Image (spheres, rainbow, N blue to C red):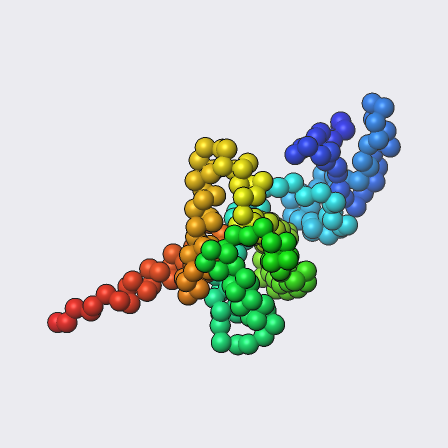
Length: 238
């Protein structure tokens, strides 16, 4: 045997219910746990996995292709969650502190005041600190019951990445002549994307019944607009 190799930039280790390996190998600490059994058949090994062979769970779990797919699924899901929350909670008929706060946000950043340098107005943009811990925690509890082991963690991580990106870019969308404008404006291709992002959100502030998605590629808006166009088409009579 040899010491574990490095994988994904971090040292790997061995796990298992047996401990018979040496404590050191070639001057390095050697992980002693293993689940090797001489002469065991596959059916006998099956009885040891996942318990006790994988208990306790390893501290590091290498990322796989499935983890990437679950991350992508989480990012896509956030497109529709973002649309639903914005349209039905913040612009819906149910009154509450979140909806009232959003109405105030539209009042402050409207028409020529869509972008501002007023510190007091900009301070009202960040959402309540507890929003993601509550929604993210609730999602994790539900998804951990429905998805394969480890998938819920990856999906909720995707939700966190999306939410952090939203909070940061939404704030800069409303900051007039910001440092981010100068940085992104100096990068070919990126400046076009950033200008499109600002304009998409400007449309929503000008016409609140449109452009509920903030984050590209605006999947909720695209589907809603397609459904609206389909509903407006005259039906053929037979």
